Length: 357
Image 1 (tube, helix red, strand yellow):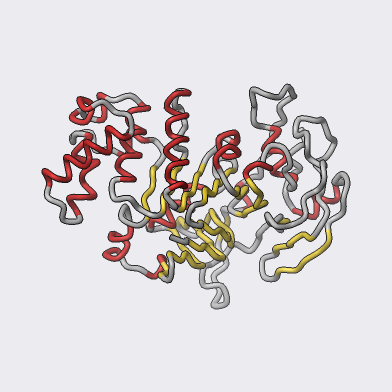
Image 2: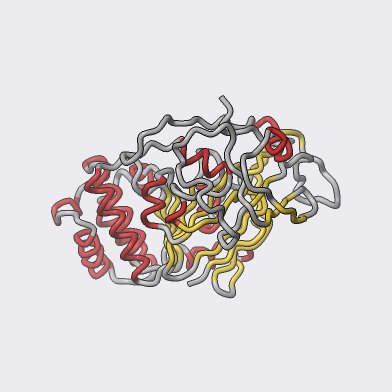
């Protein structure tokens, strides 16, 4: 099932201050495709997943559209969203142990989505045990409580719970974090199987190797905006946007010898500020937003410009082709230039040079 996200903006408000978590984000989750969302902590990845699930906190203000087929998820009430969750869109959350109720057995919690939709409890428990076995858990583990299970067993249980109703859309938030190599490999195979079953998969991860190996397309997120859309195979070898290059340089790999480059982050003081309350801007949007350059997946990619992410460069390269400029109220286009980016380039973006020490 197709999910289309257009111009999605999410603000968290507290008293007279606000934090812009997602800023006019566009994304499409297509059936039979794995879309990976990568970016540093605090860039808005989990916020996107919770927005699709309708699980944002009360202090979140949302604008834009999230369409599931012909339905706008943002317009549905709690009753209709409850029907969508687990049955149509399921999510594997971060911090798996915190997602389970500590006083209920694992099999009871995996069977709960079935019971809530009218399946007899005995039948639901049998289906849950079968699904847990499919996820590689021994039958005796189904009757244990969450505190009696390891981190890898908890993650397998979460996967079983998310797939128990065979939803056409699956969101995974850091599914391989803190897992051993064997469990990580198993989770990767489950994700591939979901793609083979024509599911729409959103993979939220910090693991760039995993994203590059599994994803059909990747969206690179920074401060709530997508910096670049690119094919998964291009993430580590042919990133086109300077921030994507910096992200690749900051990620250690086993098959490359290079100096790791840090990314100097942007202060959040620019986002947390008194809101401007006007009738023109009902969301009370902060007065200042950065101007970002966006690279689409179908844009011409620079030939060999970023073929070696580990190579030392004074500044990341600027790809040729068309840039898409985004400003607070208008969008225009301009032509990029090939070669190395100058300091003026970073000043024009209003954000720090990630390669700068």
